[in-house]
Length: 157
Image 1 (cartoon, rainbow, N blue to C red):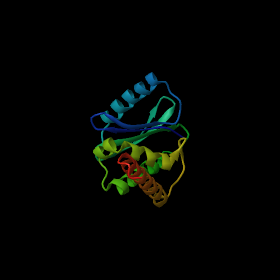
Image 2: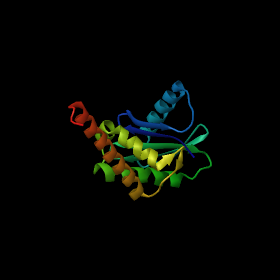
Image 3: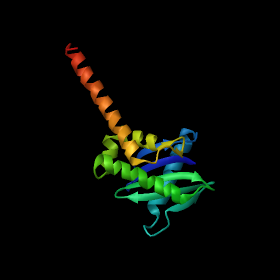
Image 4: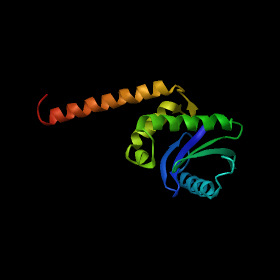
């Protein structure tokens, strides 16, 4: 089971975080600080899996972003690497070629995609087509709501 997901830049700025286990705020900040500094200090040829406390940390760098997951010590690391890759593929498919700015300015879409992929730290949907379909439906719903608000604002409804 995935305990948390972190996305951070090469400069160490956390861009997205999703916690599936309960941690106190102080502990979350400590984990973030320690993991970001540890992962950024590693050389690119080193293994993408490391041990941290009683967890395994699985991470992968895509362009300027690091995608990082914490899993239980007895979970399969390769499946988690595949989940991270699937998430990046989803982001790429939705944003074109995803970059750090896409995550910064469209963080709600990034969270929505992650929530469609994972629920409670477990994989919910593996089909990219179904996830993109859900995101497209959400976009249409949001667009319809915005149009209704504009019409209502101008007393046209």
